[in-house]
Image 1 (cartoon, helix red, strand yellow):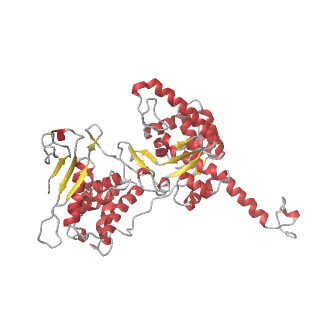
Image 2 (image 1 turned 135 degrees about the horizontal axis):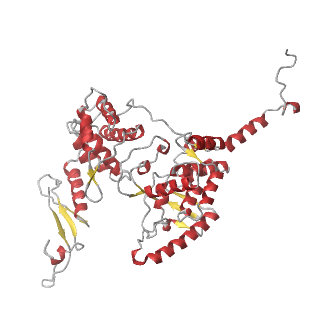
Amino acid sequence: MPKIKKRCWCIDQETGKVYREGHCPRLKEKRHGSYWFRLEAPSHDGTSRRQPRFGPYPTLQEAKDARAKEVQRIHGGDLRLSPKMLYRDYLEKRWLESKKHLKSWSDYEEIVRLYAIPGLGYVKVGDLNKDHFLRLAEEIRRINRKTKVGKRESEMLLRLLAVRAERADKDGGKKRYSTRPISLARLHKIMAVLRSSMSYLVKVGTLTDNPADNLPIPTPRRHKPLIWTEGRVARWRSTGKKPAKIMVWTPEQSGNFLDNITGHRLYPLFHLVLLTGLRRSEVIGLQWAEVDLDKGWMMIREAITTPDTDETGEESEEDLWEEDLWEEAELERLGTKSEAGERYVSLSRSTVAVLRAWKRTQSTERLKAGRHWNDTGLVFTRPDGRQIHPHTLVYTFEQLLRRHDMPPITFHGMRHSSASAQLAAGIEPKVISQTLGHSRTSFTMDTYVHVAPEIQHGAAEATDAAIPRGASAYGTWPGRREGAG
């Protein structure tokens, strides 16, 4: 592999010329100079020698990455990959590199490392078939589940378990991965990534069809939001059991919650979520630079999350599927879930007033913190300016629910509550979909229309009015046909 050299264009005071490559005394300084490399490249006539120079690159790592790509481009010209290549080598050296531009790259890398390589990495890509991927899916579902008495764990499962045994934490120590079973929703995401890796091989002509397509994997059960009616609240108070996994407040219950917590430091955050339906990652990642209080709008562009929720993935309707089992990790500053997620959101007058008051509170905290203030630029922060951890926010929300005896919902349930309140207020579905950052209006309606009884009640009255009846028919019913008996 050609060497990478650091050089600059400084003038030698003795000779009046540029220093020879590598001879400037300041090159030992970290920020002085840049990195370059040369490659042997084919000439036009196949005889003369060509060594084009590539650079400058500000860091050594960037130069290494660029060198690898240029070597592949010059010497590996043909995009066609050999079917004799091991699946592991293909994933690590080719496919993952092509996905580095994605916001969800870290998830791709984790899926490849935890499932694809230990499961099928030893197989040549040309030998992979549907049975390989079906067996891998079956073994992934067995992770962290009890093995039946008398049945041995397969070699593939042992490999999958071994790679999950421990991982490095933020302090350089070792930490175990989650011990919970892999949900169907997570399994579908894993298989979608592997299907994408095989699709690339079909596109470049290495394979004729995709062996990971159309696998008979069970579909996860979809959970639709259910509203907290008076009857359901009463039943919950007597039994302690929620009637559904995803519960939603009525507009009145949302108002009661906000009235109860007006004195809490993070009241403005909860107010904003219930009025606009922001995701947890979006409200934590909101920057003051993206908020215009004078004109009454904000731009949703960034999200701060941990991979213990599906919010690090691409846009999908997974908010309502079985919980994804991500492993706990460091906070990540990402873009929004999708192009639809990057959006303008209008602010009501009351919300603008709340945010102005919060901005004054934050300024006071900044003065109090002095030199210990962390200038993150975030709208919602800890008292010292640091970002709020998603888990801390959920814990705070759950404490407030218990303290004020509110019907329980998840933090994400506030987003659902906001959507149903907007529907009940008669806002156009297209506007609601844009406010929430959904990619399709049909998904918004399919998910939330049954949560707003006012809509269905209005439809019932409209249907009644459309069917003409005699005046005596309203409000009476004889209970039997005339002349019967």
